[in-house]
Length: 149
Image 1 (cartoon, rainbow, N blue to C red):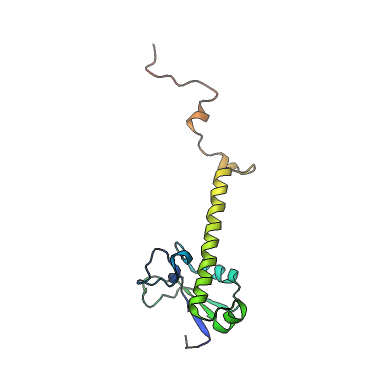
Image 2 (image 1 turned 45 degrees about the vertical axis):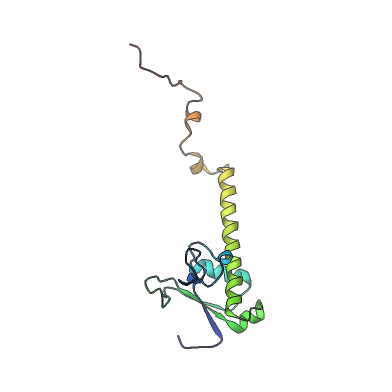
């Protein structure tokens, strides 16, 4: 794309918690996420309050040409007006903090769902294999040793 000073390029690789700062992470550990992808980046940018965003799928970062991670183009003027981020670093930290919070909320919700167990109408989840205690509760008891003839 042509150079436009009003646009800021944001790559998902900037937020990877498994990557060091030297290898390309641009935000602190507390604003980074595990397994960043373009869709998560886009939703986090929307949650922060950015309006003028353009998404490009299947583009690779120049230092990571093997991965087609995609990128976001954010209007710097729009970012300044909507969320007050004057620099790219402020913008990245705001998006990263929101994205990390979204991942935490999703993980906590999954843990709650797992502890609650299957819902009343979820036959597929209820039909899973029973524990040995549940299997033996009503029929024959398991005997140890050999059968007598």
